[in-house]
Length: 445
Image 1: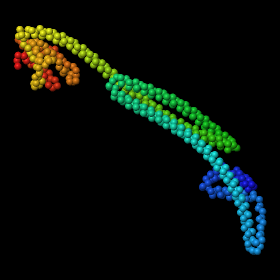
Image 2: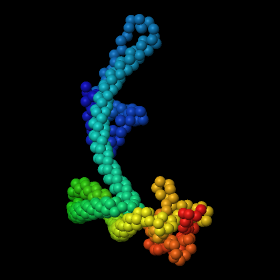
Image 3: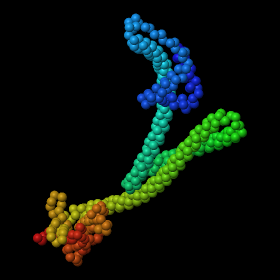
Image 4: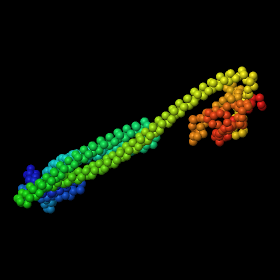
């Protein structure tokens, strides 16, 4: 017990004399068992060296002389020496056991301290890791939102391009695209307002941080003046100075982060301005497309009015032609009974295309149609004045009368027709083919 108490007191004295740096050095040397075994044994030897002077003086070992050893001359001294060595070794073993027990207790306490310190450091590291993960998550969310906005802007640009291509098709699509562009403009304006508000808030925070930094620098200079004035409180002021330095570094770090955030906000503002310009361009394009659609609508209305007027004119022509045909049919019915008595000639209307084939105008039942003298015939031909006569639906109505006996009606052939005219030579070409009409009397072959 005296050895343990004395060695424990000496160790406490040694640890009190050592600096915190030496405490940390001993802590590190004891923590690494595999690398510093020699250092541990040296410390044990030092402890033994300090503890040896405190031991009480050992009693001399009394030699026990056996009876059998009296006969031998040199064996008695040897046995006495061996017994003394054995007693000394036993005492040293007991001392070493006590020292080993004390050292094991001390190592156990140091392990407990190391474990607590490692748990504290691990807890701090876990908290720091959680904070960093939260910051990384926030940055990822911001990046995701910016990517979504970029994709939305690209999609809006693509929609605007498609709208510019499809604006020529219909007015409804142009109006829908104009509405989309207005909505996108409203969204861009809302984003701009929100970004301006965020910028205002960040500027306010930046001003607050600058005020805090100025206050911290003021405190720093005040503490520096106090350090110059007071020399007795050097250690306490050094600690305060260290704390102020840490705060200044943290504030500088925060100021650096705020400047970086301010730069990012300025970039966001530039991007928002670009988006606003793009939305303005899209709105102008949509307005142009709407104007073009309005022009096309006006043109379509004009064409529709022209077609309605043309339809009305054709309807009037059809009514007049129906009345004329009705009158001619009545006249023909009256003449059918008098044809034999008055010796009125009848004719067939024939047509040739490029002088190759002759066609006779027939009735619906397939029999050739007879025309008496002076009977009018109405022929409908496509309008040749239009640029695309094959695709246009406009047709021209021509009037041709059968020849009369005893009158100079000219040749029986006519290749040029005039709208609603009497019998005269007329002709026209259709699809690069020359068409001619002529009369053949029914009594001739």
